[in-house]
Image 1 (cartoon, rainbow, N blue to C red):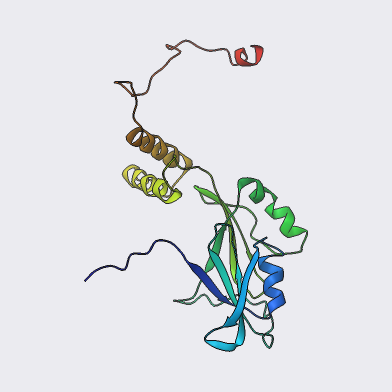
Image 2: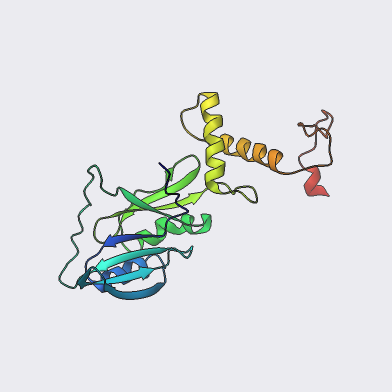
Length: 206
């Protein structure tokens, strides 16, 4: 047997209510450009809307003008989708509470996830949406997933409960050391101040 190797998420399709509700939420609240529309090719009674979440991939929604918003939480049963997480910048994440509050949208408030900051709220049909902002940038040539894998290894080695910033920082240091060449023969940690105390005001004075 051989694997069928995936290379990324192509799109995620959701069952929506009416067309305008989908446009108003995905574009009007989350800023996703509405880029494509055609009938649902498997069900001509439905429309199929396509939105760009920001990375050129797609969130798509099946709509039907006979369906209405339920405003109820989606089922939390085996096989169900628990939530969809969307990447936002740190600047945007810091504005999320105020911008949800001004719309009267209930939300979880800020959540500390160790390697990222999160906030949760529900879209008009009850699907849980997470806005997630990474607390780190991967070294050049690597992905966030690469850093998380190495940070996970460090967490297990140290017997820690969850990934914290120290695991991320150490993982990034190790990955940089392994992937970047240097003219130095000794790349171990050094003390350029030779143990002398420094004046914390010196930098400002200069």
